[in-house]
Length: 451
Image (cartoon, rainbow, N blue to C red):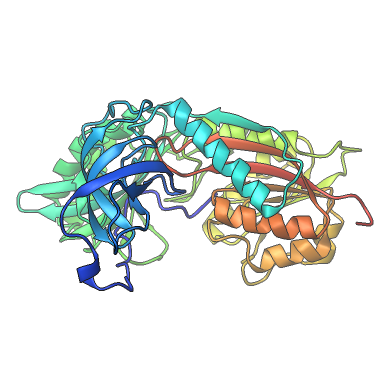
């Protein structure tokens, strides 16, 4: 659920095994058959040639489209004109769609994309070996609800660009957005003016904004250290726009951020717990998406016998799941980010929560500890749980509640869990990344003792 690419970045240069001469130079007609896992249309040429019979991926197309497109590699093409539109195709609501790298599916209805994501899950689970697939519970966020933005910064002559990278290109200035919360969008014009007046940004950088309960929380990553004058400008900006905290770190590093100005307490609530997250802390993309994930995890808990029931939570972050869980069971929470652990510890006083700092990718919780827990809650980074999954498979806890942001890794782990005697009991799809191919999933796996 964490460490996802939250803004369009330049993709790695593709290495084609084909000579340039084998790629048609002129635009040609393609029929779009389906959507690939990344949301691009998978299409075949209407009139195949001897050296051009393979399918290609064409962005911003829909199944049923006939599109005039020009190939840029053996398996990629860019659309030039929709000749025949698919019945489901609609007009995108954003003027930046097709240039901004934030959305891939605005040309299709939200209900259609939700069903498409559901079908992807169904297909993936069946390929992983799930024979008795439970019904998939669906939850979809609403436009304008995203409270977290990871944006690119670029200084141009006399201007500042704040936005998302277009595919394989420069950032597109975000002059409007139907994904982001209006509070975040309203901050962008004054932020452009602020950065233009300071020396913080020489060429490029990043801006991460979290909309907390206390207000916007800003983390600037720039290529120039702030001067005394810059700090004064930022303090005045924070006061004028009611921004409790602005932090900074040098672009391209993972250094601990330096707080440049803080004019008020910083807080977010998980249930009745008040947490002070560190700058740039991971949050779920939307408040309703967070609530849906929390509810699905709580619903997946086994029947609890007594207040001493204990669960182990892996990759706990700042406590998104920890505090709701602690209302029902004793939680042993493990997290590898020191600042997140400090925030979690400070808010855990008096609660049934034990917090441990632990790099689970290098020092996983051992199988014997996992085996004795009522349940294990796993919320790994996008790359998966690595060595920690090995310990889970060895320990064989009776219940594993798996929160995933990467279906490919989830399906791989599902196949391994099935081979170890687990069954898939429930699946919840949380669609909080609207108009994208991203999928959040909460799954409950269980096994009978002795299997």
